[in-house]
Image 1 (tube, one colour):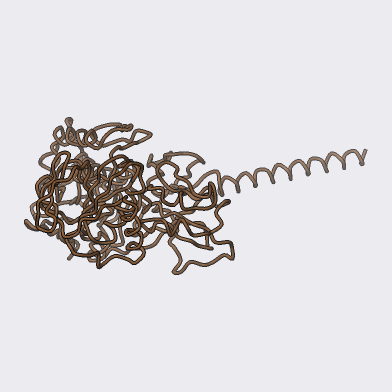
Image 2: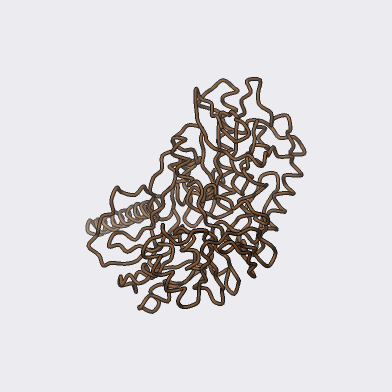
Length: 501
């Protein structure tokens, strides 16, 4: 009898111990891999979830924000040499694929070069062939490094009240840009309401209630002190989303755009825009752009602006942002504006320098390229004499059936890297790039470009014009405003693709 009771007790203890171990293991697995904390509200998010169940924020917007800051120097792990593609630089020209001697080690997937880390043996031919220096060799961790502004989960920089949203934050996805603009201004509205209630740190919810029509024209004006709640710089997807959220929240705001409405979309370096899932736009609803043109997206923006009466001032190029006594001064060529908060949605490319010629506003004119293959079987004129212009011409020359002409007003390419010079000379010798020195574009027309070459007028057939003549780098602009720039590390999967945070 005693033996029987002892056996039952032993079994009971064993079962209880196993159950405790299973529960403990499950909790550990849940903490380690099955859930994660929402960067915005810290609620637990189940594995595979796209939205935070508590605050509803799209988690993809935090891929760069939640990434760890890179160490001061890359630490070798003793592993073998391998290639890594900078996804913020790659233009999908495919030059690396043809140069790699290892079949399948690097390939184009979704218009982006991707390294198979199991097949890559570190020859380095891909890095040598890349026209935009978008491939690096390393023995360290398989990470992609991005130089970005340091921001909080609300996209606020180290400068209190100054936010950075959109492509300047490291990712150029339209969906992310829309979500980031909304998240940032919701935080501004929360803070503005708290300030009006007399509490400097607390408060929740919107700063004001929207009208039944979504219009709030009186809230767009400065207060009695002449200070706005918010100034938004840029009217691309991030800027317009921020403006719509400000409008809906009853904030006193103003949008400053250096060009025309949605100038960043008009100058978008892609022919087509693809969003695989809808994104919610304030005061509009779900926006689903499936393999459409940038012109179609601009029509959507214009319809929203017309319906809501957004406060947008075009032709207002911002030259600087400064802060004194808790108030920002945003300087433009036509005057200055003051606000307690500023959202910068200016894009990663900064302010490009323009040619100042007729036809420069045509939809076939670009200031940068993201997908080279979109220009296949086209006649393309690249304007410029620096490395960026030469690299664009080299990448375009690698596309099937593309006729590339490089126009430069100087007598020789005196400022480019030796590596780019050698590659350009090789492509000219092959007949894949035509170089026109001492030439200047005078007028861009539909189907042709009028130039002067050595003082003589010459018209060449043309489908697209790529202008690469410099501009103001956005990071210099940010540093002058006091924003800290950091380097982030995005972990790569075995196939070389970036892992979401």
